[in-house]
Image (cartoon, rainbow, N blue to C red):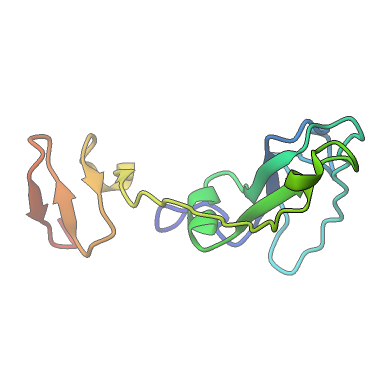
Length: 140
């Protein structure tokens, strides 16, 4: 556990919205692949699964935020079965846009010894319990 992160370079893949197996080599949130490692995955989406827009992201516990904030996420599209949509809808141009909001505020790491204070990634700017922002030296 260094710099507040745990196994920041190991990763995993997790989906949201898909009704799929949570077992190994599928949507297993506890799996971990080290740097340079290869982990075969097969996420089997059932034929009867509803169509729609879903998403995936890196999901290594304690590193998810950093990896997703770095761009390790995206859209998953499950298409409607042929003939399921009216022709005027089925013939429309589709565009996929992925928008994310990364909140840079996190609870302070315990090694700073100041519980209840939030840390912002704007240099050494801290928010105290009164909601005021204060400048703190790195060694404080």
